[in-house]
Image 1 (spheres, rainbow, N blue to C red):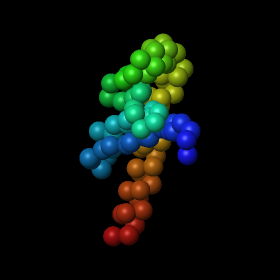
Image 2 (cartoon, rainbow, N blue to C red):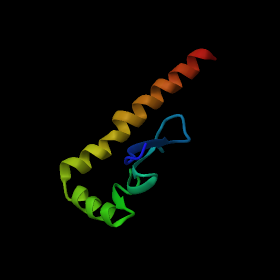
Image 3 (tube, one colour):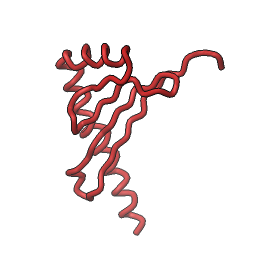
Image 4 (cartoon, helix red, strand yellow):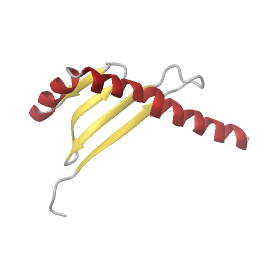
Length: 92
């Protein structure tokens, strides 16, 4: 209860059925404040605190980490959106 609170929150946003406009926003949060965010439209990490700016710079200079985060749009967002759309279509 008196410790630190750290988590990530990934949002997948889209408005078309073909998922061509899919955007993934990956928030890194510490004690309820976003300190780093990855936005697939921007294509890199952005820091919002001193610690976040420092780490965003490190992560942006690591090609494998950046490539892995960019791949999450297809692996995580589009994959799950297709499953959700299929489930909804099967019910109608």
